[in-house]
Amino acid sequence: MVPERFAEDADRTGHIMLQKNTEQTREGQGLTVPVWDIWVRLFHWLLLACVATATVTGFFADATWLRLHIAGGLGAAGLVLARIVWGFTGPTHARFKDFFPRPSAVMEHLRGGGGRHRGHNPLGGAMVFAFFLAILFLAATGLAILGGAFKTGPLAFAFTFQSGHAMEEVHELIALALLVMIGLHVAGVVLESFRSRENLARGMVTGEKEWRADDHQPRIARPRGLAAAAAIAAVGAVLILANTGLSARPVPGMPVANLDPTYAQECGDCHTVYHPSLLPAASWRALMPRLADHFGENASLGPELTAELEAYLVAHAAETADTKAANRMARGLDAPPLAMTETPFWKHQHEDLAKALFASDAVGSASNCAACHLDAETGLFSPLSISIPKQETIR
Image (cartoon, rainbow, N blue to C red; front, side, top):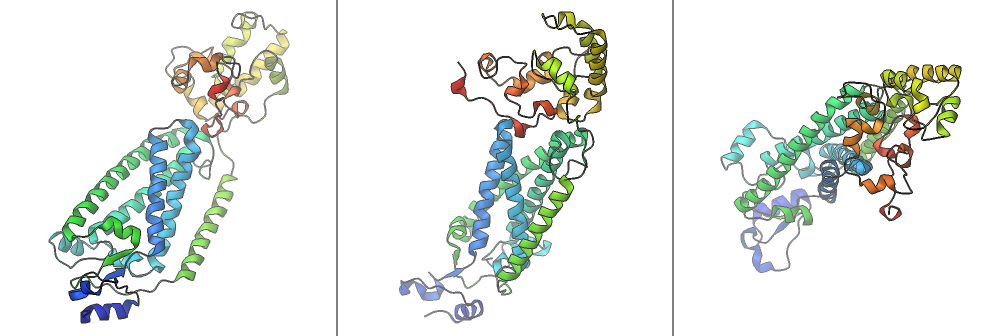
């Protein structure tokens, strides 16, 4: 016989499922109730996939994986925003009021009181909110890094290279904290599974848990699917409009957009046309008078043309741009560099690439930036514009 309290609970929720083996229904044993709706379960596992993608590409992959890293991070943030909406409009155990971590409830749970929580227990609820905050802060700091260091995205207008670079450490610290929280979460699931004698991970797959007489009784809430869909659509529209509007704002510190035609022609006849912001003004002033012996070649030009090109290069040198390359190329040197490939920054950025790559037909030399950097002539050198020739083209 089904216990009276169980029947009352089933009547209130309208969602009760009995297992076929009726012999197990004595005292409620074997009876299951739906706890996690399909949207909560999809959110949980999709969030895991997005966080795993962002973690692997962020800590272990090179710059060519940045697009996937961004996709994982923004995907996680988008899921969290949708879950926040569902936290106010979803069914009983999806709602924040069911697991908001009040200090008294947390202490009672730690003492073993308060009954079994079918949804998140108070400690689990605290971890949920911590996850949400960490992921949203990771997305915000990630956009700040993109804006400051690579001059792209909705926050490019608001962050300099230095402020964006400072966010890299914050971003990494939050990421490490998130990994620690994930470890604590997994440990908590294991311990709570032993403590409550149930497989919590399986419940997040099937959506069901066993009914028990001492279950904590929540306030029943019906899902409001249309309201949730409308709210999520509204949030998405606001974010799209904000991204479009903010991305269109002028970005301070951008390198000169269009190279001088005379400079492009005179230098492009012999080698890659280097953006003026790749070297400081002192380097251009040192290079231009030495064109008669330009890295072993005679690249002499007339005095007037030489002076004209030098003035152009100095006017748009590294000091005038706020890109990563402009800020880093001359760092750590006692004298202005004459060859970009000899700077510590260039060597550090390319140390993982095989030397055969630079000698290959596809690249030709280490100074051929445009072979891998599709935006080399813009001076941006964004990791989103890197395309390294495939290994089969390299002998």
